[in-house]
Image 1 (cartoon, rainbow, N blue to C red):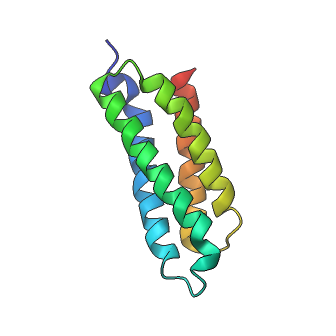
Image 2: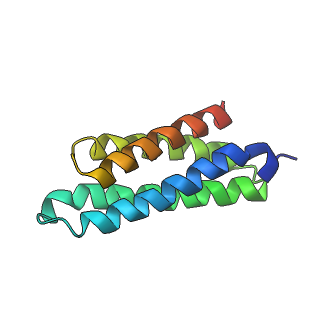
Length: 110
């Protein structure tokens, strides 16, 4: 059975990405023009939720982990694309974490 040890690098990338997405959403709420950041905040929250779910299912050795990681990669790509539109430090950090997580999830699901 595949479990935490099999997926360790992907789990770590997902947990890191989720934490940074949460940080990005929180930081976006502090921006002067919060309305302009609304799509970024929404995608940050969705991506974080998916990353936490993917990490949890991999840790449990779930049969659905591969399918969830495929979706996680798609959501990370969407979040990264949105963060790329913003020049602040937290969005750049989120962009990088999302790209790394998407790569790990695609590698795991291959």
